[in-house]
Image (cartoon, rainbow, N blue to C red; front, side):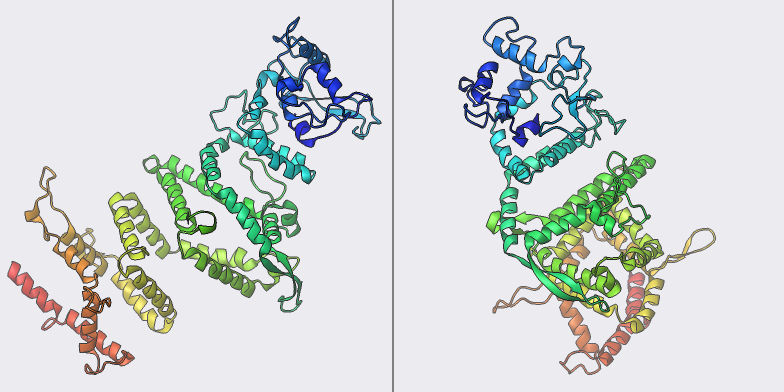
Length: 611
């Protein structure tokens, strides 16, 4: 039906005209508030409007004017033209079949006609069981399209396909939506997920659950934004490489192409199975096929299938974990929430149309840098992959994944994941960590925490390249972060530095409670949370001076004083030199471990005074 409506195929029947057909059937006359055909009443080309087809298919030949009445002419006309499903046993005399009915093929009475198939047969007819005829399964289904401006809204979409002679492609899109629309609540009559070859088959993917999201998107500025992007892409020029140096694989000739052509090529590279087959694309297991939601395979895997299959496998692993660990079944929900928040963090847009911009101002700045870095690494390791026939990059496929597997399989990564998982499982720890990260990285915060973190991170990345001086430090840190030493009975005989400091911090910050769970301040080391207040003040910049300049934090001032006092020549004001750092480190180390004049002596005094 839809195919007839959108194909706009003409039919020539002798001297019959649109007027004769309308008067014979009583459908499409002006008194029905619509013209039945796209052409005038005198035309002999019959191109029915959708409204005509709605009444042609869904007229109730069983109850409406069967013997007499206003619509007797229409009833008689349609019954003779296409039959009726009422008590019908001969498919050739029944009504219009639905898509789930088996196809019925008959000999073409006019095999020489222009629209006849080469095999001389008529295809597309149906043999239905009672209840499966179109009027029975979907009564008046398309009649509602005449309301709410559906036809006016759909016309540009249909026209776009018709202009390219691709109406069948639109049919396939709608058929795919139908198969994936329902969720697991669908009945067997409407949705049979057991047999992919069944005409009643549907995957129960629940695509219909996206309706609220799509509705929100369409009510927003998504469509105007796409329109504006298209106009912008038409003006963008991208150099496309057309020739390569056979030795260096560098591009030697380019031709300009607009942004739309480039975007189309990118989309084609993601989805086109022929293109993927031409470069022998496979997944990491060597499979050449992609996996669909219904469990069947595609003929060729494409990059988009690699991505969606990876996400499906992640979801499957979460589901398997939840089944094996029912006490921790919320892990997948947290993962999906975190993934959504990451998208919002990086891709959220503020403003609309011409004033729209990424809320995260860093995203449009680091994205080109990241892409250039990836391209540079690919070209450095796999220069031949940039030139036809575009061979696979073994560095990215094998070496990089092996290095990643080695890193992930190591004890450091496992320990880090254990810590992160422990924080995830503890609500207070997770909320506190989120608060800390928000404080350190919030660009809108009224402090210089983010700037300090970014500067320190950049410095750290540069320092980490100094293997000669850092390797000894790594050994020291590994000993400091090592586990506490225990005796054979399991008693701690020597705590590690990390365990000792964590125990100290816990003791200082912990809340003490009585047997009833009420806080007992008398048992707390720091009931007034002096340490928290002191630490906060230590990293809070001092009030600005009269000239409005920002001042350092007390901690920065203290560190500057330590530097100035303990450098080789305290009277110097120049930048610290290596001998200064060595002298400062020696003095700090002596202060920490000297039992006569250092921190150890202070501990002894405190211990004596509190015993």
